[in-house]
Length: 79
Image (cartoon, rainbow, N blue to C red; front, side, top):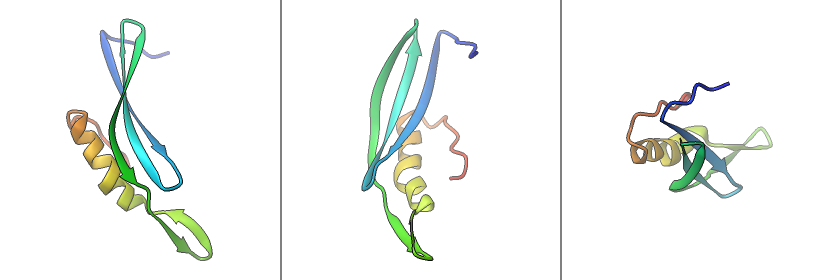
């Protein structure tokens, strides 16, 4: 179980077929508030006959701006 302090923030990513979005969830007093921080293109590439997401591009277009919009104190593993 999470040790909930006065306020906890969580950054979530929703990757759709063509676009994605970053959403900041703020848990305060037992209530969750959601705020869309950033929308971005979700580019894909074909490798060995498979359609794969371009992870580096997603970090550049989605992760970095979202972290900045959230106050810049969020670590993004893999980016």
